[in-house]
Amino acid sequence: MFIGRKRELHSLKRLYQSDKFEFTVIYGRRRVGKTALISEFIKDKNAIYFMGVESNEKQNLENFSKSIMEYDTDMPSDLVFPSFQVALEYIFKMAKKRTDYFSN
Image (tube, rainbow, N blue to C red; front, side, top):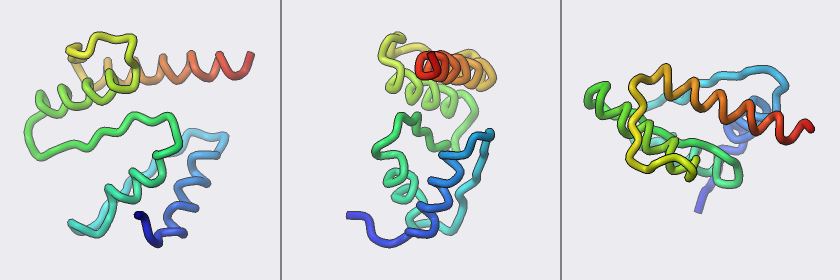
């Protein structure tokens, strides 16, 4: 069950529905509900969810690749992108295809 955070959810919704490119950072002390807020917000949306960990770049890239592959089931589940740049470019291409599909 998710309780409260109406103001934060409204802010995220406003950014999500914007016609512009938007970027937001969610930060705060440990155990205040940041992950729950994000999970609640994306539960009814097409979203790739990735949470970086205090590890190393290689491990985070593997986890990021896995998050992308869970979203795009046409890709091999064991694929690891060679860099974050390549992974982000792939996401942008997926988004472009999706935008083109809905705008036709």
